[in-house]
Every structure is written in structure tokens, then in C-alpha cells.
Image 1: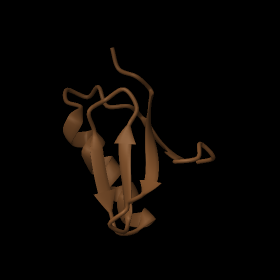
Image 2: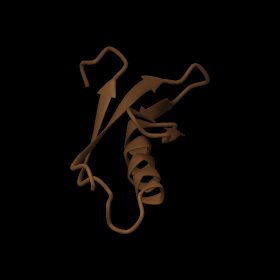
Image 3: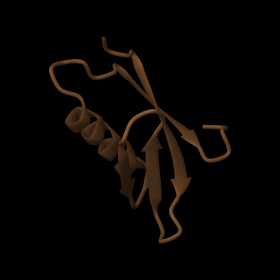
Length: 67
């Protein structure tokens, strides 16, 4: 059964740029800018989920929960 939403915790990376970790899934990605991170998140979710069970909503929360 697929979920309709997946939530990522998004933080600035100590090495520069941004990193995101899915809550409840083994998905991690990083990028230099927030715009690039959005693209990387979509790609990571598409690669992780197969058979059309991918969530329809991808939400990112900033490290302080204020997303």
C-alpha cells in the first residue's frame, strides 16, 4: 500500500550545500542549492519506489522543523 506523502529533513551540509534524509525510509540525497535539492529529491524518490507505489507529495522540513 502506498503512502500519499513522504517527508524529508533538510539541513545545510557542513561541507556546503544541502542534504536531505527521508523520515521512515532509507533515502538520502544532497545538492549545492535548494533548487538542485528539489530535483535530487524527486529523482531519489523515483529510484526508491517501484511499481507505481511512489508517494504523490514530497515535503521537506528544515532542520529546525519550520520547513
